[in-house]
Image (tube, rainbow, N blue to C red; front, side, top):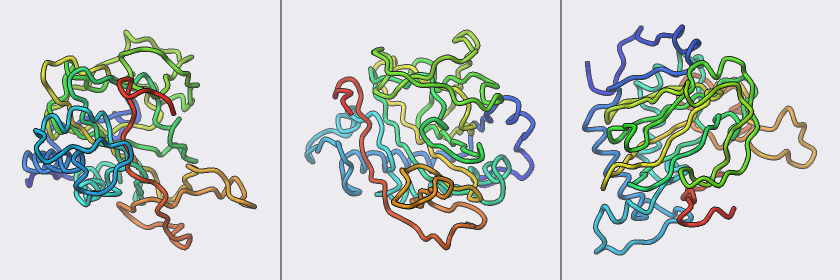
Length: 289
């Protein structure tokens, strides 16, 4: 079987509904991983186009020193053909069309570099940040390096998606985490969390209501590169912006999307180019929004 493809019938829908996530240790081939690592460097050098907040590195700066200051680039698919194509990866899409349905669209990509000492992200649900109307939000977290407990892999609270509750968020002052907020007031403890360690090329697919976090990269002189792409059913609107003048709340729809499978029932609305690539701030760069 070619690298990067699933065999039909390996998506355990019962496990996904029970736990809120599925793990595929070798969904991408090593050649794909290496190509994406090279693309990460090009993006971090600014060679693929403008990325807001990206520090410009001269041509004489070593590759690793270019990568180390970058925690996360949001929307790399807006400037990178390789990252755009990753949204459409056949192995990932095969899982998505089983857990979401036949019509699937993507709305966000995030490229993490996370060098040693860089922070993680506190407990959160993706649905808090990317609201959907039908609970179909799904992430594909793709490891470009081995992800371990030492270098800051994902931790999840299995089954925490099942209640369908969106928990409140609050500001935190914890050096372990970046500048995003922290979910709280949920009936789960850290003792129930499990790490999802992955080899390079591995993928975790998880529900948008699943509580998850990551901790800092504590491995000496290391990078923990990964891509997190977000998807949902194309049969649902995406209320990821404010209503416009005279627009009914029920019809708010962010049309800066990428169709990845099936048909788009809202294609008559056209497409927009709203989002721009930018670097997520961390505590070294200040957390002012």
